[in-house]
Image 1 (cartoon, rainbow, N blue to C red):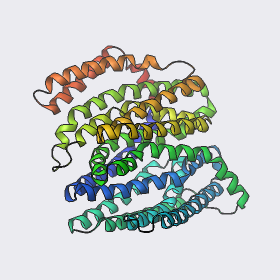
Image 2 (cartoon, rainbow, N blue to C red; image 1 turned 180 degrees about the horizontal axis):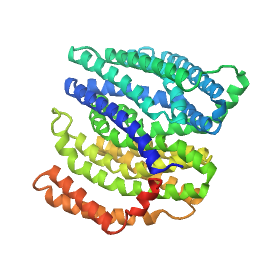
Image 3 (cartoon, one colour; image 1 turned 120 degrees about the horizontal axis):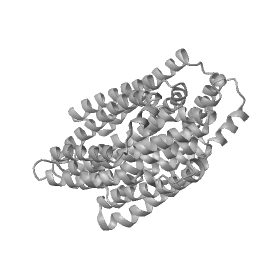
Image 4 (spheres, one colour; image 1 turned 120 degrees about the vertical axis):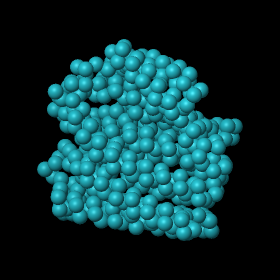
Length: 470
């Protein structure tokens, strides 16, 4: 059962280390933004986003599919783990060869070729990280998974800061990324083999091919998801250039902790949801209805807090990044549907509706791209942020329809009334106090939100006890 206690513990491990990792990355990116011009910082951001896109697309959904199959067939974990490693490495190698061939054929003199080349090497080594992550998720070894991720990020940030402080190039920064991923992948492989399961490669190519075919919906979902989140950078690069990418990515860097919070919750709760659905579907629906309520309550105050604090926080950056504050304020309003989607996405995958999840994510990614091409020429960088937020609401609406119809079998809209009322109270109080101090305004707003939530019965003690498994 995905009890509150279990998910809170697992999420705590992941959130603690991964948020530290994201904070490290955020500090590094802000340091890089301060040291580099917007154009040079945009080039570095473009390289990192390219690697991120490749890692997600090249994974082909194997991590998500593999963790689900390991949960269901744990007795066969050694053979399944071997298949996952073989699939991850072979598909990543194929992507690298195809990517290099395509780039050399279409644009042999591409100015960012050194960055892309190093990025492809990162992507190839990262296939081992993805393979071990499937095992860590299924075995619920979240502490060690997060520890290895944090250690790798620490190495990368240390090298990156050293290189930039010494006046080195962004290519050298990317080579630091390579070193960090090699160390992380090696440590993960050794730990899994010694502490969880050895990797058995005693399978025939046909079984590997069948497994690859089953990952197609997961691959489509993973590719659509990362394109949904990061296509903005690619389109801004096309329509605006490196400087626009740099300004946008400063705001996106501050936005990523909220993005990762939703992802961490999804990873930590996926194993328990899969097990509980197989054991007692009705109880699973009751538990996840309560989780849905909590996510509905959490999103609005976070969005309001970022709206009030974006300006003061980003005012410390050097000239050239002024528009980042407005970008962050727009991105903040994608947080409420983002948190709800973390539940919907898990439910669809755990209930074998991965094709529906992939379709919805594909529609949302296409909508985000279309909105970018429509809004960026007219509103600039802010238009790109508005496009992502609008597409996030569309994605959640489609998830809502599918989950209500096939899982909850009733409307979840009743869960939104009280949070919206409390959000109005928070906005009013924070706006009044903001005339004195924005930080005090957010603190007073949170207090007002809590009073309304508790006073209207949106949070009840019986629910908390139930979620805690008592």
